[in-house]
Amino acid sequence: MTLAFLSLLAAINAVLFNVAFPNISRDLHLASSQVSWIAIGYSMVVAIGSIIYGKLADAISLRKLFLIGIGLFILGSLLGFSKHDSLGIIILARMLQASGGSSFITLAMVAVRLMIEPQRRPLAFSFISVGIALAIGLGPLIAGALISRFSWPILFLVMLVSILATWLLLSFMPPVNNLGGYKGFDYLGATMLFFFIVMLLVGVNLSYYYLLGAGGLLVV
Image (cartoon, rainbow, N blue to C red; front, side, top):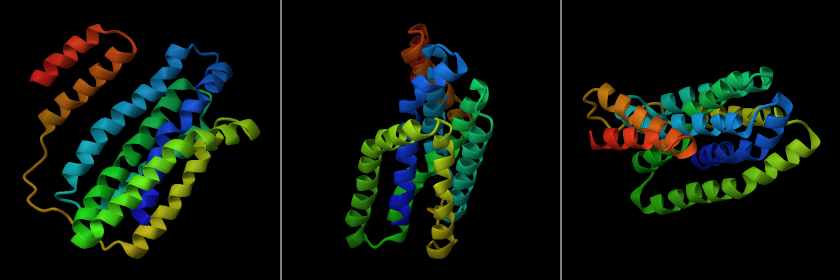
């Protein structure tokens, strides 16, 4: 249930702000193209973060990685709520949330493999899948309800519910569990992957010329 809860949070947070973009654009007097960088920045960090956390799980205990992810997630939520009058700060806050939230689903999958008996894994994966599916549907509804009664910065504050996951992890997850066989981190590969993702997302959203660079990096 802890893993399902974390997956639910990650998926809700991914779609939560999509409803708020018109409000952010109006309140900060920004064009839609400027506000779109909030989604672009979030997507870039989630894409690279998921792979990095999966690699780090070879060497670092899952509980420690989860706690690091939750810490970054909470830091981003607090920053976004307290300094929501600047687009740059909002993008940074969302990227911090993404750098933490990208660990949730990735590490949940790894945890199921390592910590749950083979005969119970299908049920565990089902719980995680249900959490993600619910989040995709509930995220916009929750965001719409909150924005209609409060203001869009409340979306940052509501994500502090992730603090509950800290207690769940410390109570129920053993501290030592990893895949083993760690042979170092591929910094060059991670860097190329990061720029590939950046060029791909920027190319799709802003200029198709960046797709040529993304294609070149993909070949490399």
